[in-house]
Length: 158
Image 1 (tube, rainbow, N blue to C red):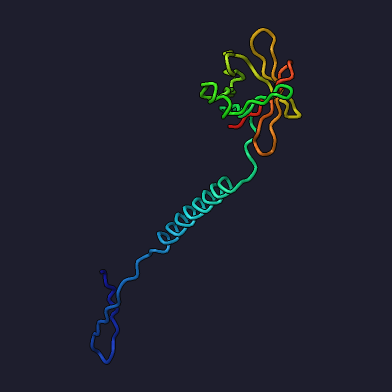
Image 2: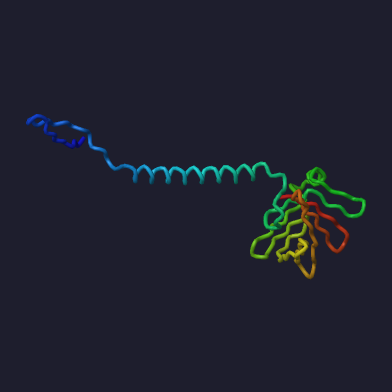
């Protein structure tokens, strides 16, 4: 460590007193504190974001995603996943809705590609095949209910 020498004259004799030099670390400490505070702020913000996402009871109401048909009802007849398995089917069906405005539909023996739009009121229109349309609504719980033109109602979940 550097030393600063002070010379004092007392009664004609020189006396040296050594005092440790003080380093100018205020700038470095300040920068370090700012960096640590920024890192802490980012960590707190990330923790809050993930906690909100983990404990949110409201589901994502965006139609974009992979939807599995949980049940299909036509009049008094209802088919759920258990009924589909008894018929040897893995699933009643699926609908994949892409951000690009396209979709793929696979319900029972129907395989089709199509397109979709969403109105301001949240109604989703899925067009496929030769003029066929499913009209769907997504609840606050994230459940989609879709109806075709033949009175079949599909319940889907992501």
